Image 1 (cartoon, rainbow, N blue to C red):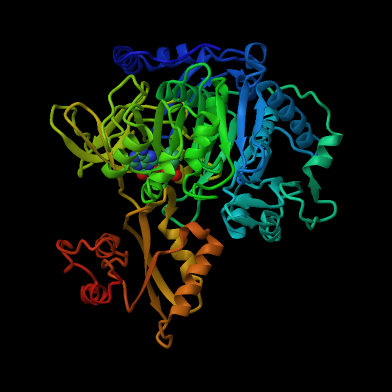
Image 2 (cartoon, protein in one colour):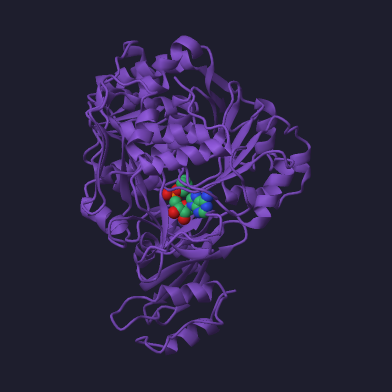
Length: 635
Ligand code: WT7
């Protein structure tokens, strides 16, 4: 394993130049440092109009050989995963690379014993425990495709995702601790399983001693299955372009998009970006607070860090339990050097008395990271001053589920940081800003604003939407011909630093969670009293954005608090509790264009209390509705 870290700003500039002049040679040099069973024949084949992207074709590898086997000789005893439980009185677990290798191999045989083969899809709905990491790596070991569903999602959301990719197996836990609460995951799964004909078996990890209802012939305990499994499991030979995993993300229609990532490019991309953005040294302890159910956890708790031979922390709990000092307590206890979290967490912790920070020794910290949404100036400074004590570079990392890895970010200690700016593109990333006419805005010394697109493929780009390549084309490659459209707006300063300004489509980022408003509207519309609804985001102090729902009721229905509760409940049950609208306003109509499209721009402005300039409303089908909605606005 070679170190891929750039060391100086000059190194960065040189690498960036090379990566745009000759991207293939650039990525070949990096890919060469990995373990391949067979070297690739063709570095890159691409066409953003088709669209199609293939990296390292003909190459054979297994990502787990790169995350585990290749470290055994030199780093076998090094800690791969430190697990910190929800309850601070329960013991942490330290798992070395060798132990992880053994556990993964054995569980891979459990998968095989239960009929899972290369290419089969396996759904994981699990708490943040090491067994989640073990299960995902075990899938990768045998070439099964994992589809991890965040363990805060509802039964309906699980069922929908399982059915979309026809998963054969579901792996879950009986219960999960989340702060002072205990949630019965198995019950949620059982409800989902009523509607998932493709599932043949369910493996249940016992996180608690509570009795668990098991269905004969289908449900098996993790531990029992392990007893029956062989120890050794050779790594399946995978093609670089074979699927590694599917991860669902919200779309602007109600249906989630199953983003497909492939083995070779994803490995190369996440590992390179991990090492360069975070700049770990040999004995550092890296902690990303995300859940593995999101892309951040896939790329920067598991694959990137493990392929780099790093020590990665997994935390089961929440930042507020047993009190708001938990993150800082863990940093002190584990001597965390690299801490990567989301702006929403920073804002909610910044609201607490500073004593929660001050009572802990944070001197081990070297680098701080932020991801998930734009970080506002105030939160940036609070983080930098109180957590980093002004000594830790803050890397604001912009990327997406679709990009697989970090795209725009400072490299810690190497390239300059600037509050609220994700700054410069990583080597290999070619961002462009597009104007209203869909033309590329040239790079000059003028600050400019536009829609953010990428004009050249990078190795970890998602290859398709599972089962729906047309939608992949439509969503990402049809807005600007020959370019990948991110859905984000951005500002670029005179030195080429990017600041991401937010989504320009119907996705809202709430507390760092990517939510499609259409899915929430569909849920609300399921209520029998509801005719139609429109959901928009508005700025929120802690969550970044919160959701505001405008709801039309049937004529004979009286608005009530009870209805508001029911609507929120429906959303929680169909999409998940994180999608519950903060505010619900009953309206008699929604502003529509003559072709019947809801004018969300106007609704967004009203919800954001930004009504000075609503733009021209006269072209609406029903302009009078705007005044009515404004008059009843829920502050
Ligand atoms: C969207 C992608 C990438 C992992 C977490 C979210 C927003 C993400 C930043 C940032 C400003 C950001 C964008 C992006 N976003 N990071 N550093 N600054 N905005 O992944 O759920 O796929 O969401 O999150 O709007 O498009 P995701």
